[in-house]
Length: 272
Image (cartoon, rainbow, N blue to C red; front, side):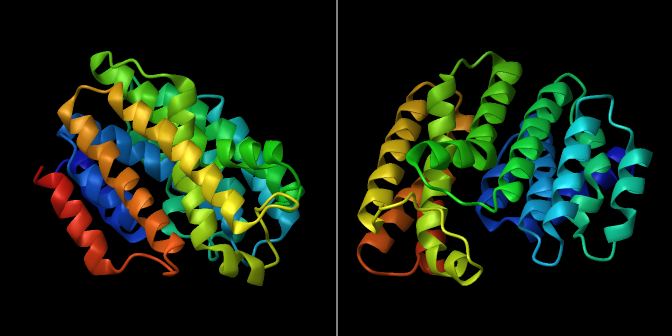
């Protein structure tokens, strides 16, 4: 097995371990897009695991995120990255330890865009770690959701344009990411509260967050209308449909969709 084929196999394995929601649609992409979106997602997940880590000190998180952001602004020195994370090696998951591999796996013509978005995300996350994830206003919420999810939309749009010239509106792409994140915020509200984090702006009720999520999911629906490539539509549709249905479940008082409902939703989209 060639090194590239081995890396692809390992990347898909790590992807499956880190995200049920994105593993399925990424697996459905054609070879070139699967490689690109898979590596891009893993890069962002690598830094997300630093931001979310329960055992790392806030100052350590900021340092790791800022220095990783700076490395991504250059050719990315894998040795320097390994040296940076070495003291925390036993605490960090494989997806974070292998950031250099995911960049190597990404097609060279688009890796610059992936690095750019991941670098901006890491810098934004460092800022929010410093602020202790305290959200006071809608502007705060917009800024937070931009860094952790809107940038995923931006990066995907860069990939679609590179792949076949598909043009999409940047604000709608950000809305796509934000909408998915807003649903996560609603779904994880109690878990977040347990660790002392609240992403609801001051004075906001659950209803206000439902409106915020719906507004952004509407942008995501408009975003979908700008894409004609069937393979890309299929990829984007699955997380979006799951977000819409999760929101519906939450509104009706359920905690989340059942695994059966998730599987049915995915099957419906694949067989459309």
